[in-house]
Length: 585
Image (tube, one colour):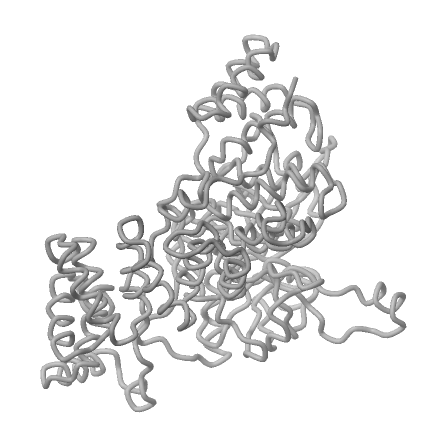
Protein backbone atom coordinates (compact mmCIF):
# COMPACT_ATOMS: atom_id res chain seq x y z
CA UNK A 1 0.00 0.00 0.00
CA UNK A 2 1.42 3.45 -0.85
CA UNK A 3 2.06 5.34 2.38
CA UNK A 4 4.46 8.06 1.23
CA UNK A 5 1.71 10.51 0.34
CA UNK A 6 0.53 10.63 3.97
CA UNK A 7 4.08 10.69 5.33
CA UNK A 8 5.39 13.86 3.71
CA UNK A 9 6.46 16.61 6.05
CA UNK A 10 3.93 19.26 7.00
CA UNK A 11 4.66 22.41 5.02
CA UNK A 12 1.50 24.43 4.40
CA UNK A 13 1.31 27.92 2.93
CA UNK A 14 3.05 30.64 4.88
CA UNK A 15 0.36 33.20 4.16
CA UNK A 16 -2.37 30.95 5.57
CA UNK A 17 -0.35 30.45 8.75
CA UNK A 18 0.28 34.19 8.94
CA UNK A 19 -3.42 34.93 8.76
CA UNK A 20 -4.12 32.56 11.66
CA UNK A 21 -1.53 34.09 14.02
CA UNK A 22 -3.03 36.15 16.84
CA UNK A 23 -1.38 38.46 19.30
CA UNK A 24 -1.17 37.71 22.98
CA UNK A 25 -3.53 39.89 25.02
CA UNK A 26 -2.42 43.02 26.79
CA UNK A 27 -3.68 41.99 30.17
CA UNK A 28 -0.86 39.54 30.68
CA UNK A 29 1.61 42.40 31.01
CA UNK A 30 3.40 42.46 34.31
CA UNK A 31 3.20 45.39 36.68
CA UNK A 32 6.22 47.39 37.84
CA UNK A 33 8.02 45.78 40.81
CA UNK A 34 7.16 46.85 44.34
CA UNK A 35 9.65 48.78 46.43
CA UNK A 36 11.11 47.04 49.50
CA UNK A 37 8.91 49.20 51.74
CA UNK A 38 5.76 48.27 49.77
CA UNK A 39 6.62 44.58 49.68
CA UNK A 40 6.98 44.55 53.46
CA UNK A 41 3.41 45.77 53.96
CA UNK A 42 0.48 43.33 54.41
CA UNK A 43 -1.51 42.78 51.21
CA UNK A 44 -4.52 44.81 52.36
CA UNK A 45 -2.27 47.77 53.29
CA UNK A 46 -0.55 47.67 49.89
CA UNK A 47 -3.93 47.66 48.17
CA UNK A 48 -5.10 50.62 50.26
CA UNK A 49 -1.91 52.51 49.44
CA UNK A 50 -2.29 51.78 45.72
CA UNK A 51 -5.94 52.91 45.83
CA UNK A 52 -4.91 56.13 47.54
CA UNK A 53 -2.24 56.84 44.92
CA UNK A 54 -4.69 56.07 42.10
CA UNK A 55 -7.34 58.37 43.59
CA UNK A 56 -4.77 61.16 43.74
CA UNK A 57 -4.19 60.84 39.98
CA UNK A 58 -1.04 58.68 39.86
CA UNK A 59 -1.20 57.07 36.38
CA UNK A 60 1.13 54.23 37.37
CA UNK A 61 -1.13 53.30 40.29
CA UNK A 62 -4.27 53.66 38.14
CA UNK A 63 -2.87 51.25 35.57
CA UNK A 64 -1.79 48.71 38.22
CA UNK A 65 -5.18 48.92 39.93
CA UNK A 66 -6.79 48.19 36.56
CA UNK A 67 -4.55 45.13 36.18
CA UNK A 68 -5.61 43.89 39.61
CA UNK A 69 -9.31 44.23 38.76
CA UNK A 70 -8.74 42.53 35.38
CA UNK A 71 -6.96 39.57 37.01
CA UNK A 72 -8.88 39.52 40.30
CA UNK A 73 -5.73 39.90 42.41
CA UNK A 74 -6.59 41.17 45.89
CA UNK A 75 -9.93 42.46 44.59
CA UNK A 76 -12.97 40.85 42.92
CA UNK A 77 -12.38 40.30 39.19
CA UNK A 78 -14.17 43.13 37.37
CA UNK A 79 -13.47 44.00 33.72
CA UNK A 80 -15.63 47.16 33.90
CA UNK A 81 -13.58 48.56 36.79
CA UNK A 82 -10.38 47.63 34.96
CA UNK A 83 -11.55 49.68 31.97
CA UNK A 84 -12.52 52.56 34.27
CA UNK A 85 -9.04 52.77 35.85
CA UNK A 86 -7.24 52.28 32.53
CA UNK A 87 -9.26 55.11 31.00
CA UNK A 88 -8.04 57.43 33.78
CA UNK A 89 -4.41 56.42 33.18
CA UNK A 90 -4.79 56.49 29.38
CA UNK A 91 -6.16 60.04 29.51
CA UNK A 92 -2.80 61.02 31.03
CA UNK A 93 -0.93 59.46 28.10
CA UNK A 94 0.03 56.22 29.89
CA UNK A 95 0.92 53.90 26.96
CA UNK A 96 0.29 50.56 28.69
CA UNK A 97 -3.21 51.69 29.67
CA UNK A 98 -3.88 52.90 26.13
CA UNK A 99 -2.83 49.54 24.74
CA UNK A 100 -4.92 47.69 27.33
CA UNK A 101 -7.99 49.74 26.38
CA UNK A 102 -7.35 48.95 22.73
CA UNK A 103 -7.30 45.23 23.57
CA UNK A 104 -10.52 45.49 25.59
CA UNK A 105 -12.35 47.30 22.76
CA UNK A 106 -10.98 44.91 20.13
CA UNK A 107 -12.12 41.86 22.09
CA UNK A 108 -15.27 43.35 23.62
CA UNK A 109 -14.23 42.78 27.23
CA UNK A 110 -15.69 45.22 29.77
CA UNK A 111 -16.88 47.42 26.87
CA UNK A 112 -18.84 46.82 23.63
CA UNK A 113 -16.62 45.43 20.85
CA UNK A 114 -15.48 48.37 18.70
CA UNK A 115 -12.60 47.93 16.23
CA UNK A 116 -12.47 51.65 15.41
CA UNK A 117 -11.96 52.59 19.07
CA UNK A 118 -9.47 49.71 19.42
CA UNK A 119 -7.37 51.09 16.55
CA UNK A 120 -7.61 54.58 18.03
CA UNK A 121 -6.22 53.45 21.39
CA UNK A 122 -3.63 51.14 19.82
CA UNK A 123 -2.32 54.04 17.70
CA UNK A 124 -1.97 56.28 20.76
CA UNK A 125 0.11 53.59 22.50
CA UNK A 126 1.99 52.60 19.33
CA UNK A 127 3.16 56.15 18.61
CA UNK A 128 4.74 56.11 22.08
CA UNK A 129 6.67 52.96 21.15
CA UNK A 130 4.44 50.32 22.76
CA UNK A 131 5.49 47.16 20.87
CA UNK A 132 2.34 45.19 21.71
CA UNK A 133 0.15 47.91 20.22
CA UNK A 134 2.37 48.07 17.16
CA UNK A 135 2.10 44.35 16.43
CA UNK A 136 -1.67 44.37 16.99
CA UNK A 137 -2.01 47.23 14.51
CA UNK A 138 0.11 45.24 12.07
CA UNK A 139 -2.25 42.30 12.37
CA UNK A 140 -5.30 44.52 11.88
CA UNK A 141 -3.82 45.93 8.65
CA UNK A 142 -2.64 42.49 7.45
CA UNK A 143 -4.49 41.55 4.26
CA UNK A 144 -6.01 45.04 3.98
CA UNK A 145 -2.88 47.18 3.66
CA UNK A 146 0.19 44.94 3.81
CA UNK A 147 2.65 47.84 3.48
CA UNK A 148 1.19 49.41 6.65
CA UNK A 149 1.24 46.03 8.35
CA UNK A 150 4.97 45.68 7.54
CA UNK A 151 5.61 49.19 8.88
CA UNK A 152 4.05 48.40 12.25
CA UNK A 153 5.69 44.96 12.47
CA UNK A 154 9.04 46.61 11.70
CA UNK A 155 8.61 49.12 14.55
CA UNK A 156 7.82 46.36 17.07
CA UNK A 157 10.46 44.00 15.70
CA UNK A 158 13.26 46.54 16.08
CA UNK A 159 12.31 46.78 19.75
CA UNK A 160 12.91 43.04 20.12
CA UNK A 161 9.30 41.78 20.05
CA UNK A 162 9.62 38.09 19.03
CA UNK A 163 6.09 37.84 17.58
CA UNK A 164 6.71 40.91 15.41
CA UNK A 165 10.08 39.53 14.31
CA UNK A 166 8.40 36.29 13.24
CA UNK A 167 5.65 38.17 11.39
CA UNK A 168 8.21 40.36 9.63
CA UNK A 169 10.19 37.28 8.64
CA UNK A 170 7.05 35.76 7.14
CA UNK A 171 6.22 38.97 5.25
CA UNK A 172 9.69 38.87 3.64
CA UNK A 173 9.38 35.14 3.00
CA UNK A 174 5.98 35.57 1.30
CA UNK A 175 6.63 38.93 -0.37
CA UNK A 176 3.66 40.60 1.35
CA UNK A 177 4.02 44.37 1.58
CA UNK A 178 7.74 44.06 0.74
CA UNK A 179 9.89 42.49 -1.96
CA UNK A 180 10.41 38.77 -1.37
CA UNK A 181 13.79 38.33 0.33
CA UNK A 182 14.81 34.93 1.75
CA UNK A 183 17.91 36.32 3.49
CA UNK A 184 15.92 38.98 5.36
CA UNK A 185 13.26 36.41 6.25
CA UNK A 186 15.90 34.14 7.82
CA UNK A 187 17.47 37.10 9.63
CA UNK A 188 14.17 38.00 11.33
CA UNK A 189 13.23 34.38 11.97
CA UNK A 190 16.55 33.85 13.76
CA UNK A 191 15.95 36.86 16.00
CA UNK A 192 12.53 35.51 17.01
CA UNK A 193 13.64 31.87 17.26
CA UNK A 194 16.47 32.64 19.68
CA UNK A 195 13.83 34.18 21.95
CA UNK A 196 11.88 30.90 21.93
CA UNK A 197 9.23 31.76 19.34
CA UNK A 198 7.94 28.35 18.19
CA UNK A 199 6.55 29.71 14.90
CA UNK A 200 9.98 31.04 13.94
CA UNK A 201 11.73 27.87 15.09
CA UNK A 202 9.43 25.73 12.96
CA UNK A 203 9.83 28.09 9.98
CA UNK A 204 13.63 27.83 10.18
CA UNK A 205 13.36 24.07 10.36
CA UNK A 206 11.22 24.10 7.22
CA UNK A 207 13.63 26.45 5.42
CA UNK A 208 16.64 24.19 6.10
CA UNK A 209 14.58 21.06 5.43
CA UNK A 210 13.55 22.28 1.96
CA UNK A 211 16.63 24.38 1.16
CA UNK A 212 14.66 27.61 0.69
CA UNK A 213 17.18 30.44 0.26
CA UNK A 214 19.88 28.39 2.03
CA UNK A 215 21.65 25.11 1.25
CA UNK A 216 19.50 22.15 2.30
CA UNK A 217 20.69 21.00 5.75
CA UNK A 218 18.69 18.19 7.39
CA UNK A 219 20.69 18.32 10.63
CA UNK A 220 19.90 22.02 11.11
CA UNK A 221 16.27 21.36 10.22
CA UNK A 222 16.11 18.71 12.98
CA UNK A 223 17.71 21.14 15.45
CA UNK A 224 15.06 23.82 14.83
CA UNK A 225 12.18 21.34 14.67
CA UNK A 226 13.25 19.97 18.06
CA UNK A 227 13.21 23.42 19.63
CA UNK A 228 9.65 24.03 18.38
CA UNK A 229 8.45 20.51 19.18
CA UNK A 230 9.78 20.69 22.74
CA UNK A 231 7.28 23.45 23.51
CA UNK A 232 4.39 21.00 23.12
CA UNK A 233 1.13 22.78 22.41
CA UNK A 234 1.17 25.87 24.58
CA UNK A 235 -2.21 27.52 25.07
CA UNK A 236 -1.16 30.50 22.90
CA UNK A 237 -1.62 28.19 19.87
CA UNK A 238 -4.98 26.73 20.93
CA UNK A 239 -6.89 29.04 18.58
CA UNK A 240 -5.02 27.66 15.55
CA UNK A 241 -6.24 24.60 13.63
CA UNK A 242 -3.97 21.71 14.61
CA UNK A 243 -2.35 21.53 11.17
CA UNK A 244 -1.16 25.13 11.61
CA UNK A 245 0.28 24.78 15.12
CA UNK A 246 4.06 25.06 14.81
CA UNK A 247 4.73 22.74 17.73
CA UNK A 248 2.54 19.90 16.41
CA UNK A 249 3.83 20.30 12.85
CA UNK A 250 7.40 20.15 14.15
CA UNK A 251 6.59 16.97 16.09
CA UNK A 252 5.22 15.34 12.93
CA UNK A 253 8.20 16.44 10.82
CA UNK A 254 10.62 15.08 13.42
CA UNK A 255 8.83 11.76 13.24
CA UNK A 256 9.35 11.68 9.47
CA UNK A 257 13.03 12.56 9.80
CA UNK A 258 13.70 9.88 12.42
CA UNK A 259 11.76 7.39 10.31
CA UNK A 260 13.75 8.23 7.16
CA UNK A 261 17.09 8.85 8.89
CA UNK A 262 17.43 12.41 7.59
CA UNK A 263 19.56 14.68 9.79
CA UNK A 264 19.50 12.03 12.55
CA UNK A 265 20.29 8.30 12.74
CA UNK A 266 17.33 6.26 11.53
CA UNK A 267 15.23 5.27 14.56
CA UNK A 268 11.70 4.07 13.84
CA UNK A 269 10.85 3.73 17.56
CA UNK A 270 11.72 7.37 18.17
CA UNK A 271 9.80 8.30 15.03
CA UNK A 272 6.71 6.64 16.51
CA UNK A 273 7.17 8.61 19.74
CA UNK A 274 7.09 11.89 17.80
CA UNK A 275 4.13 10.73 15.70
CA UNK A 276 2.30 9.88 18.94
CA UNK A 277 2.86 13.39 20.27
CA UNK A 278 1.42 14.97 17.12
CA UNK A 279 -1.38 12.39 16.82
CA UNK A 280 -2.43 13.00 20.43
CA UNK A 281 -2.98 16.66 19.49
CA UNK A 282 -5.24 15.66 16.61
CA UNK A 283 -2.76 15.98 13.72
CA UNK A 284 -4.49 13.94 10.97
CA UNK A 285 -1.36 12.91 9.06
CA UNK A 286 0.33 11.81 12.29
CA UNK A 287 -2.72 9.73 13.19
CA UNK A 288 -2.67 8.07 9.78
CA UNK A 289 1.07 7.40 9.88
CA UNK A 290 0.74 6.01 13.41
CA UNK A 291 -1.99 3.69 12.18
CA UNK A 292 0.40 2.51 9.46
CA UNK A 293 3.14 1.90 12.03
CA UNK A 294 0.83 -0.35 14.08
CA UNK A 295 -0.43 -2.04 10.91
CA UNK A 296 3.09 -2.95 9.73
CA UNK A 297 4.71 -3.32 13.17
CA UNK A 298 7.39 -0.73 12.39
CA UNK A 299 8.61 1.12 15.47
CA UNK A 300 5.63 -0.23 17.43
CA UNK A 301 4.18 -3.69 18.09
CA UNK A 302 2.00 -4.96 15.25
CA UNK A 303 -1.52 -4.23 16.50
CA UNK A 304 -4.39 -4.01 14.02
CA UNK A 305 -6.84 -2.83 16.67
CA UNK A 306 -4.73 0.27 17.39
CA UNK A 307 -4.05 0.66 13.67
CA UNK A 308 -7.80 0.64 12.96
CA UNK A 309 -8.49 3.12 15.80
CA UNK A 310 -5.85 5.62 14.61
CA UNK A 311 -7.02 5.28 10.99
CA UNK A 312 -10.54 5.89 12.25
CA UNK A 313 -9.50 9.14 13.94
CA UNK A 314 -7.65 10.35 10.84
CA UNK A 315 -10.56 9.41 8.59
CA UNK A 316 -13.02 11.38 10.71
CA UNK A 317 -11.31 14.73 10.08
CA UNK A 318 -12.56 15.19 6.52
CA UNK A 319 -9.15 16.13 5.12
CA UNK A 320 -7.26 14.79 2.11
CA UNK A 321 -5.56 12.38 4.51
CA UNK A 322 -8.99 10.98 5.40
CA UNK A 323 -9.41 9.31 2.00
CA UNK A 324 -6.23 7.26 2.32
CA UNK A 325 -6.85 6.58 6.01
CA UNK A 326 -10.28 5.14 5.14
CA UNK A 327 -8.80 2.90 2.46
CA UNK A 328 -6.12 1.61 4.83
CA UNK A 329 -8.64 1.07 7.61
CA UNK A 330 -11.01 -0.84 5.35
CA UNK A 331 -8.41 -3.43 4.27
CA UNK A 332 -7.81 -4.50 7.91
CA UNK A 333 -9.42 -7.81 8.78
CA UNK A 334 -10.73 -7.73 12.37
CA UNK A 335 -13.17 -10.00 14.12
CA UNK A 336 -16.27 -8.49 15.74
CA UNK A 337 -14.64 -8.21 19.19
CA UNK A 338 -11.54 -6.47 17.81
CA UNK A 339 -13.61 -4.16 15.67
CA UNK A 340 -15.78 -3.20 18.65
CA UNK A 341 -12.69 -2.40 20.73
CA UNK A 342 -11.17 -0.31 17.93
CA UNK A 343 -14.41 1.64 17.56
CA UNK A 344 -14.60 2.16 21.33
CA UNK A 345 -11.00 3.41 21.48
CA UNK A 346 -11.51 5.96 18.73
CA UNK A 347 -14.93 7.13 19.93
CA UNK A 348 -13.69 7.62 23.51
CA UNK A 349 -10.46 9.34 22.48
CA UNK A 350 -9.84 12.80 23.93
CA UNK A 351 -7.40 15.45 22.84
CA UNK A 352 -3.98 14.87 24.39
CA UNK A 353 -4.37 11.10 24.74
CA UNK A 354 -2.28 8.32 23.23
CA UNK A 355 -4.50 5.30 22.54
CA UNK A 356 -3.99 2.25 24.78
CA UNK A 357 -5.52 -1.21 24.46
CA UNK A 358 -7.99 -2.33 27.10
CA UNK A 359 -6.20 -3.85 30.09
CA UNK A 360 -2.81 -2.35 29.15
CA UNK A 361 -0.88 -1.74 32.35
CA UNK A 362 1.89 0.66 33.23
CA UNK A 363 4.29 -2.19 32.51
CA UNK A 364 2.84 -2.65 29.03
CA UNK A 365 3.05 1.10 28.44
CA UNK A 366 6.66 1.14 29.57
CA UNK A 367 7.58 -1.82 27.42
CA UNK A 368 8.24 -4.39 30.14
CA UNK A 369 6.50 -7.71 30.39
CA UNK A 370 4.91 -8.65 33.66
CA UNK A 371 5.51 -12.06 35.24
CA UNK A 372 3.43 -14.10 37.63
CA UNK A 373 3.63 -14.19 41.41
CA UNK A 374 3.16 -11.48 44.05
CA UNK A 375 4.30 -7.93 43.30
CA UNK A 376 7.33 -6.47 45.06
CA UNK A 377 8.54 -2.89 45.42
CA UNK A 378 11.45 -2.42 43.00
CA UNK A 379 12.20 1.28 43.24
CA UNK A 380 10.98 4.72 44.26
CA UNK A 381 10.85 8.21 42.84
CA UNK A 382 9.28 11.55 43.67
CA UNK A 383 6.07 13.06 42.27
CA UNK A 384 4.40 16.41 42.85
CA UNK A 385 0.74 17.37 42.54
CA UNK A 386 -0.11 20.06 39.97
CA UNK A 387 -3.91 20.25 40.13
CA UNK A 388 -6.67 19.94 42.71
CA UNK A 389 -8.10 17.04 40.68
CA UNK A 390 -5.12 14.98 41.85
CA UNK A 391 -2.96 15.07 38.72
CA UNK A 392 0.74 14.71 39.51
CA UNK A 393 4.01 14.71 37.57
CA UNK A 394 7.06 12.47 37.78
CA UNK A 395 9.65 11.09 35.32
CA UNK A 396 8.91 8.60 32.57
CA UNK A 397 11.83 6.45 33.75
CA UNK A 398 10.29 6.27 37.25
CA UNK A 399 7.15 4.55 35.93
CA UNK A 400 8.57 2.58 32.98
CA UNK A 401 8.21 -1.16 33.48
CA UNK A 402 6.12 -0.89 36.65
CA UNK A 403 3.15 -3.22 37.05
CA UNK A 404 1.63 -0.93 39.70
CA UNK A 405 2.39 2.53 41.04
CA UNK A 406 1.61 3.38 44.65
CA UNK A 407 1.90 6.26 47.11
CA UNK A 408 4.16 5.30 49.98
CA UNK A 409 2.26 3.72 52.87
CA UNK A 410 -0.94 3.14 50.88
CA UNK A 411 -2.14 0.02 49.12
CA UNK A 412 -4.31 1.68 46.46
CA UNK A 413 -2.73 2.21 43.06
CA UNK A 414 -1.90 5.43 41.26
CA UNK A 415 -3.31 5.70 37.75
CA UNK A 416 -0.79 6.27 34.97
CA UNK A 417 -2.51 8.69 32.57
CA UNK A 418 0.20 9.17 29.96
CA UNK A 419 3.95 9.26 29.59
CA UNK A 420 6.50 10.90 27.31
CA UNK A 421 9.80 9.09 26.85
CA UNK A 422 11.32 11.95 24.82
CA UNK A 423 10.75 14.57 27.52
CA UNK A 424 11.07 11.98 30.35
CA UNK A 425 7.77 13.03 31.94
CA UNK A 426 4.78 11.02 33.15
CA UNK A 427 1.33 12.17 34.24
CA UNK A 428 -0.27 10.38 37.20
CA UNK A 429 -3.69 10.55 38.82
CA UNK A 430 -3.60 10.30 42.61
CA UNK A 431 -6.51 8.77 44.53
CA UNK A 432 -8.99 11.47 45.62
CA UNK A 433 -8.52 15.22 45.38
CA UNK A 434 -6.14 17.63 47.07
CA UNK A 435 -6.08 21.31 47.94
CA UNK A 436 -2.29 21.60 48.14
CA UNK A 437 -0.74 21.93 44.67
CA UNK A 438 2.53 23.16 43.20
CA UNK A 439 2.76 26.63 41.67
CA UNK A 440 4.55 26.75 38.33
CA UNK A 441 6.77 29.64 37.31
CA UNK A 442 4.82 32.18 35.20
CA UNK A 443 7.68 32.62 32.73
CA UNK A 444 10.14 29.69 32.92
CA UNK A 445 12.01 31.04 29.89
CA UNK A 446 13.27 33.91 32.08
CA UNK A 447 15.32 31.50 34.23
CA UNK A 448 18.90 32.74 34.39
CA UNK A 449 22.27 31.06 34.72
CA UNK A 450 23.46 31.43 38.32
CA UNK A 451 19.93 31.80 39.72
CA UNK A 452 19.33 30.20 43.13
CA UNK A 453 17.11 27.12 43.17
CA UNK A 454 16.08 24.42 45.66
CA UNK A 455 15.08 20.79 45.13
CA UNK A 456 12.62 18.97 47.38
CA UNK A 457 12.29 15.22 47.05
CA UNK A 458 12.70 11.80 48.58
CA UNK A 459 16.17 10.47 47.68
CA UNK A 460 17.36 7.17 49.18
CA UNK A 461 13.99 6.91 50.89
CA UNK A 462 14.86 3.80 52.88
CA UNK A 463 18.00 5.44 54.27
CA UNK A 464 17.41 9.20 54.50
CA UNK A 465 14.56 11.21 56.06
CA UNK A 466 11.05 9.96 55.28
CA UNK A 467 9.94 13.60 55.57
CA UNK A 468 11.78 14.56 52.40
CA UNK A 469 15.03 16.36 51.68
CA UNK A 470 15.56 20.00 50.71
CA UNK A 471 18.81 20.74 48.85
CA UNK A 472 19.78 24.22 47.59
CA UNK A 473 21.85 24.94 44.51
CA UNK A 474 22.07 27.16 41.45
CA UNK A 475 21.25 26.93 37.77
CA UNK A 476 24.66 26.17 36.28
CA UNK A 477 23.44 26.13 32.64
CA UNK A 478 20.13 26.88 30.94
CA UNK A 479 20.54 23.91 28.57
CA UNK A 480 21.26 20.30 29.38
CA UNK A 481 23.38 17.45 28.08
CA UNK A 482 24.52 18.13 24.53
CA UNK A 483 22.85 21.59 24.62
CA UNK A 484 19.46 19.92 25.04
CA UNK A 485 17.04 22.85 25.31
CA UNK A 486 14.51 20.59 27.08
CA UNK A 487 16.78 20.50 30.13
CA UNK A 488 18.57 22.77 32.57
CA UNK A 489 21.73 21.92 34.51
CA UNK A 490 21.71 22.40 38.30
CA UNK A 491 24.20 22.00 41.15
CA UNK A 492 21.72 20.81 43.82
CA UNK A 493 22.84 17.26 44.78
CA UNK A 494 20.51 14.45 43.70
CA UNK A 495 20.46 10.74 44.55
CA UNK A 496 18.39 7.69 43.56
CA UNK A 497 14.78 8.55 44.44
CA UNK A 498 15.24 12.23 43.54
CA UNK A 499 13.88 11.60 40.04
CA UNK A 500 10.67 13.57 39.56
CA UNK A 501 11.47 16.09 42.32
CA UNK A 502 10.37 19.69 41.74
CA UNK A 503 13.07 22.31 41.20
CA UNK A 504 11.88 25.62 42.69
CA UNK A 505 13.01 29.21 42.61
CA UNK A 506 13.20 31.30 45.79
CA UNK A 507 9.51 32.23 45.47
CA UNK A 508 8.49 28.58 45.52
CA UNK A 509 7.61 28.44 41.81
CA UNK A 510 8.47 25.18 40.04
CA UNK A 511 11.05 25.88 37.30
CA UNK A 512 12.00 22.28 36.49
CA UNK A 513 11.73 18.56 37.27
CA UNK A 514 14.79 16.57 38.39
CA UNK A 515 15.63 14.01 35.72
CA UNK A 516 19.16 12.62 35.93
CA UNK A 517 22.75 13.05 37.04
CA UNK A 518 25.94 12.53 35.08
CA UNK A 519 27.29 9.02 35.72
CA UNK A 520 30.42 9.19 37.86
CA UNK A 521 31.76 5.88 36.58
CA UNK A 522 31.07 6.66 32.92
CA UNK A 523 32.69 10.09 33.15
CA UNK A 524 35.68 8.72 35.06
CA UNK A 525 36.16 6.10 32.34
CA UNK A 526 35.73 8.64 29.54
CA UNK A 527 37.71 11.58 30.95
CA UNK A 528 39.73 10.23 33.86
CA UNK A 529 38.07 12.61 36.32
CA UNK A 530 34.92 12.61 38.44
CA UNK A 531 32.16 15.15 37.72
CA UNK A 532 31.15 17.54 40.50
CA UNK A 533 27.43 18.26 40.97
CA UNK A 534 26.55 17.83 37.30
CA UNK A 535 22.82 17.18 37.48
CA UNK A 536 19.99 17.78 35.05
CA UNK A 537 16.34 18.74 35.28
CA UNK A 538 13.56 18.99 32.70
CA UNK A 539 12.95 22.67 32.00
CA UNK A 540 9.85 24.51 33.20
CA UNK A 541 8.95 25.26 29.56
CA UNK A 542 8.91 21.56 28.72
CA UNK A 543 6.86 20.79 31.85
CA UNK A 544 4.24 23.42 30.93
CA UNK A 545 4.10 22.16 27.36
CA UNK A 546 3.53 18.60 28.62
CA UNK A 547 0.67 19.70 30.89
CA UNK A 548 -0.85 21.89 28.18
CA UNK A 549 -0.69 19.04 25.68
CA UNK A 550 -2.61 16.83 28.10
CA UNK A 551 -5.08 19.59 29.03
CA UNK A 552 -4.14 19.51 32.72
CA UNK A 553 -5.01 22.72 34.60
CA UNK A 554 -2.24 24.09 36.80
CA UNK A 555 -1.51 27.07 38.99
CA UNK A 556 1.07 29.69 37.99
CA UNK A 557 2.76 32.33 40.09
CA UNK A 558 3.46 35.91 39.18
CA UNK A 559 1.10 37.48 41.68
CA UNK A 560 1.41 41.20 42.24
CA UNK A 561 2.43 40.40 45.83
CA UNK A 562 4.81 37.46 45.21
CA UNK A 563 7.97 37.52 47.34
CA UNK A 564 10.99 35.37 48.04
CA UNK A 565 10.75 32.85 50.88
CA UNK A 566 13.15 31.28 53.34
CA UNK A 567 14.45 27.75 52.73
CA UNK A 568 12.46 26.57 55.75
CA UNK A 569 9.23 28.00 54.31
CA UNK A 570 9.96 26.48 50.89
CA UNK A 571 10.42 23.07 52.49
CA UNK A 572 7.22 23.37 54.53
CA UNK A 573 5.20 24.23 51.43
CA UNK A 574 6.72 21.63 49.11
CA UNK A 575 6.15 18.87 51.68
CA UNK A 576 2.38 19.40 51.28
CA UNK A 577 2.30 18.58 47.56
CA UNK A 578 5.17 16.12 47.01
CA UNK A 579 5.15 12.40 47.67
CA UNK A 580 7.10 9.17 47.22
CA UNK A 581 6.04 7.08 44.22
CA UNK A 582 6.70 3.36 44.52
CA UNK A 583 7.27 1.11 41.50
CA UNK A 584 5.90 -2.41 42.01
CA UNK A 585 6.69 -5.31 39.68
